[in-house]
Amino acid sequence: MQIVLSKNFKLISVKPDSKIFLIRFIILLLLASWIAGFLLPLIISIENPFINYFLKRFYSTVCHQESFKCISIGHAGMLVCARCTGIYFGAFITSISSLFIVVPFISKKLLMISILPLMMDVFLTTSGVYTYSQFLSFVTGIIFGMVIYLFTILELEKFILNK
Image 1: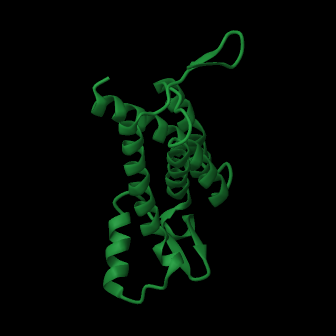
Image 2 (image 1 turned 60 degrees about the vertical axis):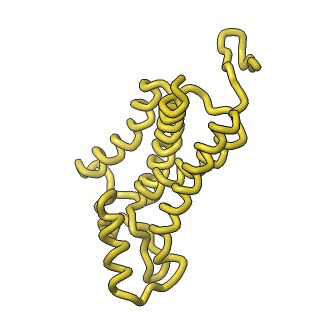
């Protein structure tokens, strides 16, 4: 099937077959589990210090977990910062939609462009041009998370299916 978006731009699309759907569904379940883990302190109160320690250490392998950069509700805070939360939520939202719509080809150039807002936010915050914003970090994380998911899933499918 071919979808024409304008005279000069064409997007060639193929409906995902059952193998691709299965791969994407498994990735969706893994992402949902990962997100549920770092949201756990917001969902339920964990009184066990061993479980709290284990979860915090587990997620510290992927995030700095600076408390003022983590989204908090009441006395409970997420186990990853706002930017990491955005990256995972961007990937999760895109993984859901990739089950039902055609995933476009993502070039390395677009991948590099998608990280620019994130890098600019980090640079401008670190250099003191403006103060840290959880909202801005979350949004730049979502943008990067969406693109990195699309790029990664297409590469993974190419590798698994030997295309």
